[in-house]
Image (cartoon, rainbow, N blue to C red; front, side, top):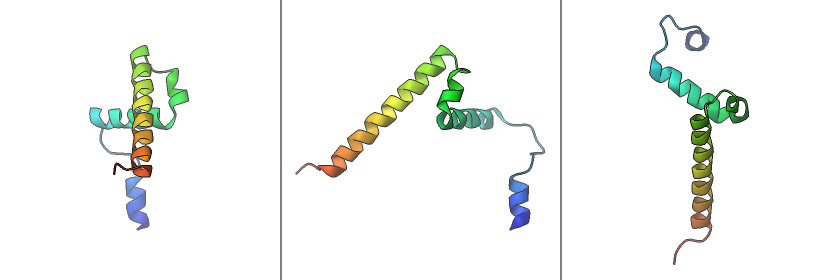
Length: 71
């Protein structure tokens, strides 16, 4: 088990692919949006704000539908 964990969390022997880099950056922005705010372009900031607005809207809508379902 330890050997598997060491192999998973050690440095890769190959260069990163563009999709891996994009996924990592998206996760970093979602995890630390305040830190990423200074690095993002204005269009990137707009995407972050829009994404959080959509996520908030969907969360509230889901809670309302679960709390008061249609009869």
